[in-house]
Image (cartoon, rainbow, N blue to C red; front, side):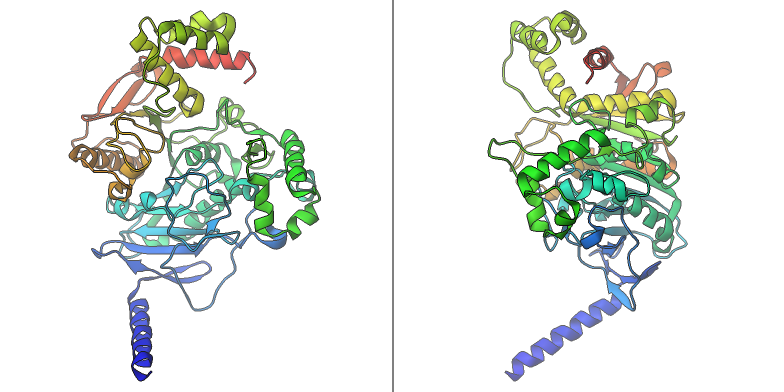
Length: 519
């Protein structure tokens, strides 16, 4: 008994000693104490509240200021991930679990004091606005911070908790808006960075916003929103933009009706007071698969406040943030549809999807052989899923953004892992390369070329964060993407190489055809 008590006392003393040795930084709400990386070069702060818990009457409201605290808050563990259902098998979490009390962020900084004025990279995770969190090992910021940047990541509300649209919410809003609470969470985190990052050694006037998939959609939307103007000066989008024909941001009016119908069917009431009185476990049932296998999607809308107009309309009018942009996508975004495909079968797809424009579609894709048909089908699948929306974002910003734009195509085939087939460059494949976290991927045997590609991408990304230009050192030259330069694309293979875009006709055809169809 005595021995046990001594062990407990020693453990407590050890914990106290470790805490006393942790780096401490003052924020606008109070002091936080973090930890130091194993090599002693990175100071790490996790789970810092950047907004009040969105619970009770704050459910489905814009993020409110976090409360101040007394003393020093421990910041050595990730905060809870926001409410979500299991969405993706390959997501691994290192947090306490799901909770509505989830609006926290993390900081990885190589700065030793607040005089460093290092560039800051703020990351937005993907997951279809339905899943994800900052605690995933693949997007841990420690390795990227070794490149001389501060990395920040935030949790933001997801699914019905982050994007529910309801006429009663619209009526109670001083802006006559509802929805987009998850996007406003992201903006609140950016505002926190602007107010606090100097004390972590960062430069609040040199912030790059970057994200993947839904995170990339979010970056394009943050550029469009008047609420985020001036909070970041550069942007990187990896696979996705808010210009999608398959994942559009619907109007608030449309969503008020569809969201009410969805919750009424699954929860038995549409009254806001009833919905706010329910537990989070009850509310999340609205996002569960229905008996027919369908699943309701709660995503961003054109709410009239965060987004006064649609994202394409804002860019067309040149009202988006005018800042340098890197964006691109992966070679196999749509997966590998099949192993063989004939020209005749490709024509059947064209006829089904484009009717009397089928021949123009086939011509735009340059299909004359079965091998070309298979390659074109793969590219078309990726375009429908996410590549077209990224291309349209790039094109729109080139037209009205007034700042350098850089486009990439990630092409290094994966060696395969627990969840993905070898030989593909699949959706989300780029994350571990950008963060330098290849060893976190389950079942992946990392090759020398993977290490090299990770080094290349980290250097391009952090060069851009530092100067607004990805070029520097011995890296292959990455030209800007514009008509004057023949639409140069950086092909991220081994070795990387910039070449003029040879596939522009495909995307111009899709733009014309889908706009004509009202998509």
